[in-house]
Image 1 (cartoon, helix red, strand yellow):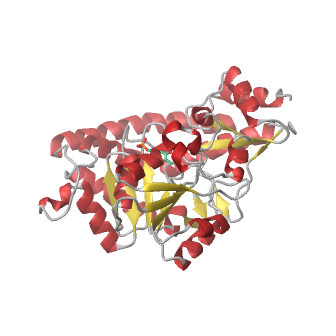
Image 2 (spheres, helix red, strand yellow):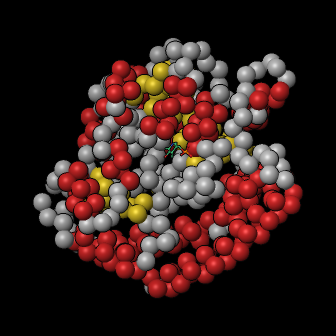
Length: 365
Ligand SMILES: *Cc1c(COP(=O)(O)O)cnc(C)c1O
């Protein structure tokens, strides 16, 4: 398919997308707007059906999806949660909020996936969960990680805020965790404005998460909060879920177009793990010979935004708030310092894609 065809298809998608959005919003207005309305139930059914799960649970944000996922398991204040230092700080706040301690474990070389050997060294009797956070739509070796967490009988939570539709060995990345978390914030793969959801195959974990996010079922036995998504957000969610495969295709077409037209030995795409398939959330470019921060600044000066710039390409323990949890993670440091992210979203015009290609090809060290 040529890029023009792709762009026309986006326009088609967008026109029909707009009418679909409006139709579902109207239905929500007529049938109820709360987090327990018909539209929310229907959106949860859509997600569950798409991912082939018995249920999905919608929540108010990706951050609340992580908070809810942790509450699926028992813990005491001061217990430990293993996380990679390459994730966004958003994943850490729910850990702190529950009075838990983040334990930073290094990633594998050129990967956002936790290194099982390092993980083994970090496990203690107080470890309550491991959170894997694959970034920008690139899969990690979650199959191996799950084997490892199974050995220690520690639950694996997949924070898939970036990895809606990402696969490994032809399975959803979600399938490798006991619980998987998603964000549908405006900046993520698909959007409900603000919002998120969790998936699990385990009925008992589902009940615990449902209860926590809905006031402990109001029975006064367990603590709960209100993390519900509302009917208007769910209406947009239903409308967008219907186009999600097309949306991925456009993103992947944009990626292919960029990769087919760049020829600069200074950069390469971050390697995709064997058996993995990406979702086109962003293109991860790695500087092969120079400091990636130079590449990030260069692209920025060419008018091309880089998501990774938000983090200043550093591991999380460099933030003042998290300095107390520092554990040297050389692979994480090296990886973050080597990358820039290139947008692939469906609103990109042909001209913008050409501008990206031109900028990459002109990069010199
Ligand atoms: C964005 C993001 C979150 C937080 O999601 P919100 O919907 O913005 O609360 C959590 N984890 C990861 C990996 C994210 O990228």
